[in-house]
Image (cartoon, rainbow, N blue to C red; front, side, top):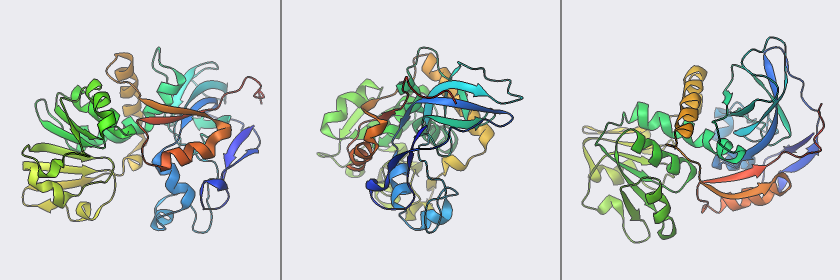
Length: 327
């Protein structure tokens, strides 16, 4: 089968498509024929191996060279084979999943009790794959850390990003009044996702504005707790997906900064959230925004595009081929 392999850290040219053995499912595992995956910003850091401290923190990164040499952390596909003892899935089931790595390949094996679920009804493979990482990141911040309540004022900085587009929709699901911050060309998009107000960061600095917020969720690390405390309410919370200095010193009076390594939460919690995601998509309360699609053969170009920092929503990788061997 084909797989995107990298054996050393560097720029995106270290990525190569190689022919590797098709994995065989062990007991209680399923083999998935992958149809789609995505390029996430985390993938960029894994390829470069920077910052160096990330090599110490991640189980998939080695000090001198990568441990897991096939990237890709979200996918949608079809169950191709089941191992002994599998009861939750059958051959032919459409599934979506968030493995720790390995989604840039024709096939992957995952435990049936891993982070895998049946795809939402009527969702395409592209839409399903694109939802996993963004929702499973945004949801615990908004629901668990921010504890968003109906009527609260929530600002999403980086609202047109993958996490940001889902954060708008989730905050609206919880009943919040949402303000999205983005560039001029994406204001209509974030309004279409439910944002009550949209701020063009090229023209206005929300940290100097007259409005205050119960929660500020910065998904792109373009602000700081110190900058935002002025526009937080008395017990306001600043949340970030990046471990910034403010998150290490998280209190300024009654106001707080919060950081969460969402991918390190207990598997049972993340499985629950994946099923919740499925229900939200099926009820029409959540949709994936897809910027571009690339075939697997253009994996380097896809990463270069994401690295420019201007993608809107998600960048999808199309993988499935009609001539993929059956194993």
